[in-house]
Image (cartoon, rainbow, N blue to C red; front, side):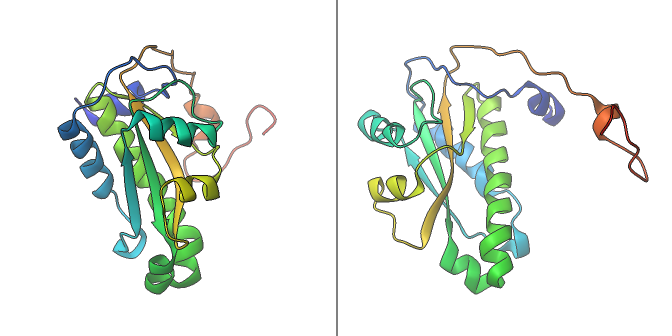
Length: 176
């Protein structure tokens, strides 16, 4: 699959088939995540892969943003202490969040390549997920990525290049 095809084709999937995802596919998806760039090559993220249905249900209970019943959840965390050690306040407070986003995008694109649907979820109780996964205080869950075989195919929203992309300088369009 071509990269641009994957970028344009990936949708946020919120309804999943009742099918598990093979471990080797999950490993390949996660490998894509760890190959994402990180600020200063810090690599301070931590990924927790959840496939146990009971644990997924418990996480759903503190995560209103998870819709449907995914086959797997990726809990994308940051080791905030290590991020601070490697990059100071900038590393801990800014770069670590950007790193989570880039890794998650890689995860979702590789999942799409494997015919797995995904959805990034930010609506969850961090302390609740932290407790459910026995994460130490310094390992902070920043984003959840739900994964599963799609039971829906949402249409992509329109994109208007000329309204958001400018060469050389910003030009107001449509009252913006």
